[in-house]
Image (spheres, rainbow, N blue to C red):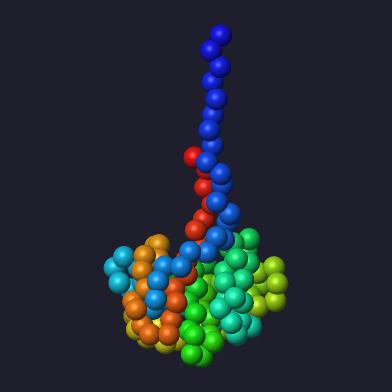
Length: 133
């Protein structure tokens, strides 16, 4: 009798962070995402911890941007999405970031984060969703 075996790839951890590059995050079309300032994060580590926490909170969070000079963290969502502090398992202070809303009259990009625009002082991180093969 012939025996069959199945090989599975190990599931990536939900909320795994991947550095996309320097600058503010952009879509394939070069648009910026709707963002929320995380007022309770003042370091890149805290910013990435917020991205980790978003994995169990909501699938709407696509990534984060961290601005080194001002130590500020922005959570990124698609243009039509909205997130609220109660969606997270730990206390978080959010404020809708108006600067990018004005930059894109449609309210922001949608779809996957593909690159950073190389704006000095910023780092772009995206969340890689888990998967099975």
